[in-house]
Amino acid sequence: MVPQHAVTARATDVGRRTVYTRADLIAAGMRGRDITASVRAGHLLRVRRDRYVLADTDRDIIEAVRIGGRLSCLSLLRSLGVFVHRCERVHVAVDQGTSRLRPVDQERAIVHWVAPSGRESPLHAAPLLDAVRQSVRCQRPRAAVATLDSLLHHGLVTRAQLEEVFRSLPVRHGALLRLVDGAAESGPETYMRLILRAIGVDYETQVLVPGVGRVDFVVEGWLIIECDSREFHSGWESQVQDRRRDCAAAQQGYVTVRPIAADIMGDENGVRQMLEAVIRTLGPKFTS
Image 1: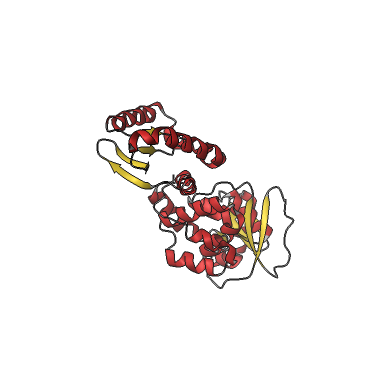
Image 2: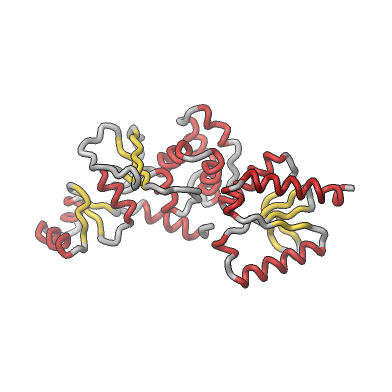
């Protein structure tokens, strides 16, 4: 999970000018020969006609501009720190009718032809809501809900803005909006919430258990589920803390399970079957 302050900073950064036209550079005080010298020295890169970037600009942005479009969809959201399950290629938004498109390596990039939305955006990045709309269409339903949860959780969009996005999507996507919950702090938590909904059990999220701390889920009042990910649970100190929390929870009558994120998002049926077996086996002992 990317910290809130980091996401806010990235969202601010993405709106800043990253790609420059020759007119921009001259307005900033450079002369034609200065631009030429900077390109030759490698300080500036001429990505395509009348498009310049600094040498340390993100490679995905360079590729999007080189092609003739803007970074968008899953690539843009991932760059902001929003949860995206998988993004193997650079997603590039290209306005319909754009000519002189550069060759596209299909293994490297995917082009989304879009009608101009009228929203202002910098030369390197599509408008955020346009990227959100495309991300819903580019992912499996569970992954799309996790991305939308993340956007809400980090405050990058409002519920009203999501409703606006869904009004422009095919009706078949409408059911996803009803599943969105900005309380989820990570992608695995969203996936777990959807698994628990499918099982049909009662659950609470982000529960503060006295003597234990805040836990991801409490199911049927007795089962704690923590959605562990490698990023935050790989060190021994984290494991020690987790085990102490589990012992403290056990003293109060809770059972704790910690499915790993890779299984939650990659083996949903297996995790669901495991949880159903735990609830079926141990549930009667807590409800009798």
